[in-house]
Amino acid sequence: MPPRNAPTSPTASPSIVFADNDPLVLEAISELLRSKGYDVHAVEDGLAAWELIREVRPTYVILDVVMPRLDGSQVCWLMRQDPTLRETPIIVFSSLGAQDFRHFPSLSADAYVAKGEFAAAFQHLLAALAHLQAKGRVDLAGGIFGYDATRPREIVAEMLLELRRYQSLLSALGPGTLELDTDGRILRTSTGACEILGRRETQVLGESVTALCSPRDHATLQQLLCELATATRPERCRAVVRFGERDVPIQLCSLMGDGRCTGVLLIMESAGTPDVAASVPRCDNTAHSAGGTKGAGPIAGSPEAPRTQP
Image (cartoon, rainbow, N blue to C red; front, side, top):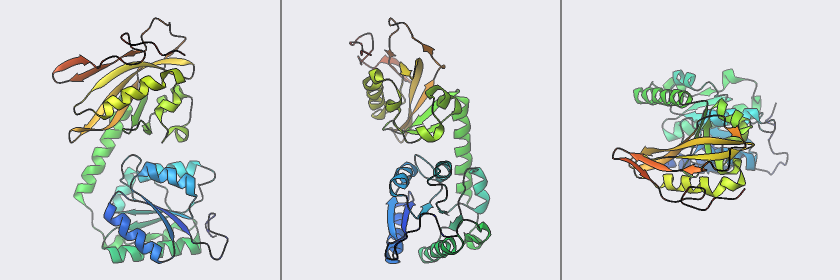
């Protein structure tokens, strides 16, 4: 059966959302696909891909697996949870060896294409697209292209092991944990955090955490995130933020790489309690480093600044 989102007009170009964090691959393959008549929307990370997929409703999606923000398996999972997107054919275009896909149990693609030399990889992509156009999503056995010429890459295996360790660490930090990008958008979430927020995972991934808290805490939380995003060393701050009907104590920790903040970890220290007394400070902001602990200055809702009104 043809893809659900296939264009009905004979003159309409099939649309593709293509996500790959390698700019050279992204540009070269996108141009080659356009030369074959495809309408290509190219992005460099998984979160941008997910946002674009919801906006464009493409005929096909081509995803790298290991990408910033959201990886390809997360994008696959989100698409399969959405009734309007779950039948969209997905092609995984990756340098991972076939044996590495076990690290991504949510990867539910319809065709798998190995990266390699551009000309060969592009021909394999065209073959995968032709296969999906002819067979639809029902024949995965014929949807594997180019893996007979690939060899396991030790560096990729090591990277995947580190990813698994990181995901395990994230789960161990507490029942209510969110990983945010430097703009405060949610990239990963624990089950406990979804319960505290009162939303499903598909409803929070990609959303700004400030949009999920009480309006009275928007400015406080946004300022804390801005301070951490510009940090040049590991820093941490605490606050009490209202989610739904509960005031939840949280910690915000900067995630550092190459001397700059690459993201923020938000840890909900408990499920919170309803109707916390007004005398409880809404924020107690501190920054921790190897040299000790220091105050981060007055912010909205802290003892040194005017309280944000509900």
